[in-house]
Image (cartoon, rainbow, N blue to C red; front, side, top):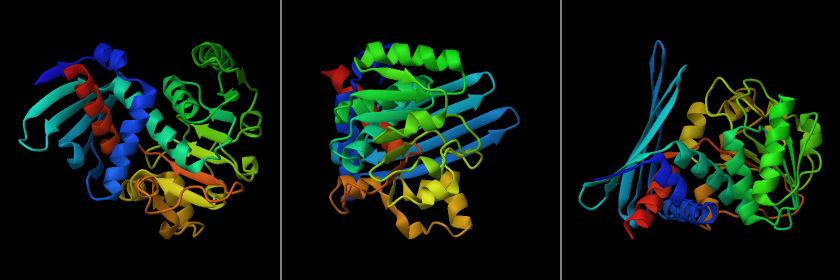
Length: 307
């Protein structure tokens, strides 16, 4: 069994290759060649253990991610096994891997749900996770401008400077969320907000939204009416969404959203359901972060380092 460090993951993963790997895993899931189990959480007084597992049988891999979240920080690992023999293949430090695969999932969704001529991104949130979101969307669309907002002025300006240099695309820090979203063809929410920061007032025909920051019952980035007004809503895992996506559960409870409106991203990627059908559609990808994405990323790292 190989032990793979954070440094090796950072040196190995490229966003375009990871998007292709995650997309292939979703495609195989649509055709019963992969499976995913939703996240489960074990709470103790000072923190939480999170467990999630999946199998990519088409590639002969299965594995799980475990991570802890405590006031002192978080610790992430992925364990990858052979789906033929059960042999442990790799234990992978997975902080960077998780950041990259979350971005890659948004890249896959943007490839299938955003307008092909999308040129502008508006992003709410300017932390570490926001970096891979921009990198992924820019990998699948010819982006010409980015507008970014977060509450801390100095952090959003530093983020804009850093990502302008990294992507070679002008990134402008804005004074409020509206200024970031109004010019956008693709909107991204990737914050720690507990209460909605994305209002239905920001919606316009043709907008695609990647809502990627909230994955618990205690947090929402989008309000009830912005979710309800979307023409097409895709999720990475239907079962997991019903367990922990407060942005969908609240509209459902107040009868603004039927579960039948939620579509698996895997079925869209796999050709079983259509992606974007009209330029004026408003589309939403509610990303929760699932184990199959981790297994796809872990497989890519393992194969790259083994060759």
